[in-house]
Length: 215
View 1 (cartoon, one colour):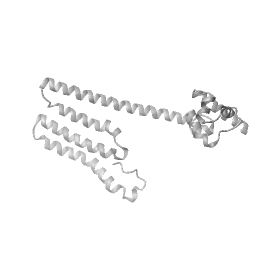
View 2 (cartoon, rainbow, N blue to C red):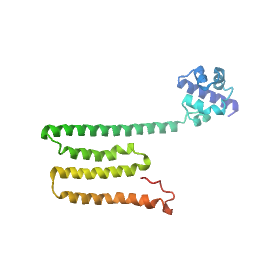
View 3 (spheres, rainbow, N blue to C red):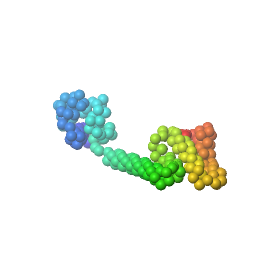
């Protein structure tokens, strides 16, 4: 492709993206601190913008630098961005759904327990069970990535023990000791894996390419 053809193709692309952004030549020129005739020359293929203006032009026209230099839309990148946006929306919506469900369950059980039994007994079982579920569905979103595993596992362990204590307080009996023993056995594997990773994984020469410490 000749240089004149390249300039024409580039100019047509700039004009197309300017119109899609809802800008006049005067509007674009004002944003870039250039004259309207300068923008007109770009679009007519008479000249190229200065390299130092690339970032500003891309921001004004809402395009990437790759699209600027290629003078065409990067459909694959846009498709990936749309998919990422849909996924983020789905995750956010799911977390809000769970949060709303938890709130409704806790408030409803609180009112029912007081209204029917005039005290709070089995409500604590519901509350600790909801808190345990919250550790896996919503809590990870509020914890920094590097500490997410440790925080969620620690909080879930505490909530699980509180759930057992709430059940024991409601029904009584010696089964609590067995429940705590089973809980300890079930938690030994994830906590053991975390301890090995935390204290030995980073120092092992075989883990030079391993991910960073999750906790």
